Image (cartoon, rainbow, N blue to C red):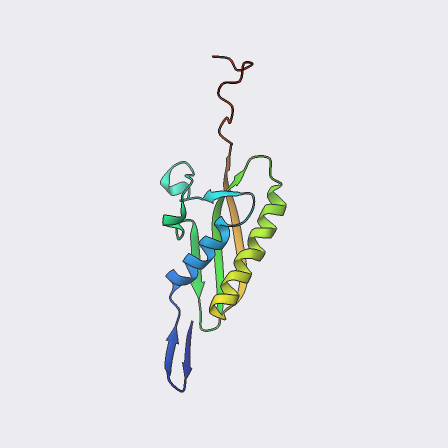
Length: 126
């Protein structure tokens, strides 16, 4: 995005929009992490350090389109999680940048299983 006003030009880089979208995605309930994509091998869970990974954006003068590759927690309703994800990302990007988000496309590339919480379970096979 770039905006020309009386005091000068304002530009918002693609990286800024990617970071905002990635952070909003990671804050969405049911999202285990972002995926680096199939081209990097198996889908990997990534932490906040690499929030731009798994996010592709196209930023114009006043609009943005966002593509997300995510890993969903096992047991979550994927359709509901993805709808919430789209809304959270759209809201975060629009509120912080003033851009109009025309689409948020989501590709689910994996399912994350929870680690076993109770290793000392007497019913667990050793």
